[in-house]
Length: 94
Image 1 (tube, rainbow, N blue to C red):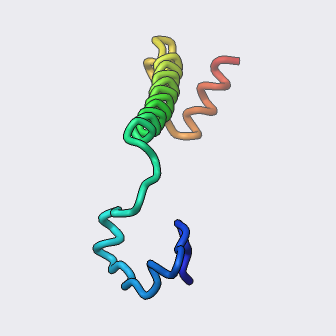
Image 2 (image 1 turned 30 degrees about the vertical axis):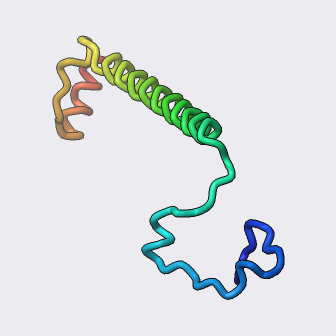
């Protein structure tokens, strides 16, 4: 399937060879944007990435704060004990 990106008046571009994979990966496509427009688009993409990174950073900081709150001094002394010992402690508290 062949897509026409630009007008092909008088069959000027008929029968041109297709690009191979290496040529396609080079990104040698035709751009109709000016250099200023391309730079503006790149800046917009970078701004969006920066916003996403800042949001991710804020989420990680909030997660860290929650973990610090969970591990406060009152929970500092946690030990693993058997279920039998846990029941004994619960009865002793009552």
